[in-house]
Picture 1: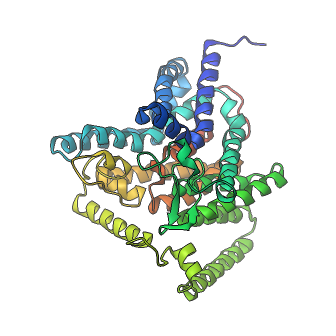
Picture 2 (picture 1 turned 180 degrees about the vertical axis):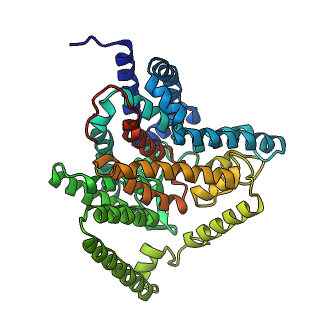
Length: 437
């Protein structure tokens, strides 16, 4: 047996760090909120994963130095090239934003982190996974075991725990709300489990439910997990997540059919079901239960319904891009803009519009191109489980990001893009045996 080399030992350590990050991500919001509220320095605690990733860079650089195939992939891959172009747009738009007082330093830094970190993590995961089989072999455990904890805790929130139980972990007005409701109705509390909120939980479950639906090992366990995950997703009342999951599962079913006739029947059936669902919701539009669950428009103490707020924000986002096609600069929109004390925050209720607001039409087009080429690479490998699951969930999450800032949530963004890097590491031709995905 060959003795482990320095490269072998290093890739083992780097793979372990990546697995550690991916496993802890679903619990990141809960842990950092507790630590920050009890020990102080909340922002520093929230950067634990970025600190680990930064510490990995010398090791990744050593792998690049030692392995020619890694360097060839890095310098020739079009996703990496697009990322460098994307980074260039951020550099070009940052200086004018600072000089003109559109953004302060803190918001600018967080704007860079929110928009750039997960794509950089994708590249790191691809390079490390190309040198070791560990992440490819264990991705199911890395994804599904933490998800089981998230789902179980979500069910406990719904069935057993007091509505404001999270306040014991430091949740509150200065960190993350201890509970969320539909239109300020306490009896309609939204499950948020260990994630940052109900909508981030719903977006996370799009990935998890897609994976459970696609997995065929231990069918009874996957079925039980799928049922529990769907229940938690329903009581998150995240309508974008419901639709995103439906898109992802619909694609998985469509791809599983072998004949064009079966696919046409499926498409016609789904179209009929959609028409019936729309007609049914329209006929029930004045029913209190339908208003609450599906439309979020029931009478309540909220001064404006969530639909009104979202529609207004989306309209402002489009208007900003048309008025400022070059963007206003990183950190001037999205969650990072809350840290900009020079301007009011701009929340467009769409991650794609957020990118357009920050780095303009050019930056938005580059980001869309990155998504397209990753989807294309996954499509070529869709016969295997991991790429098929990631491709279907990407379709669902793309819809979610059209009407929310899902990629701004580090738990989901790092997890999905990290797994995508592991999946596409097979593009890098190293002399090691790759396991089936």
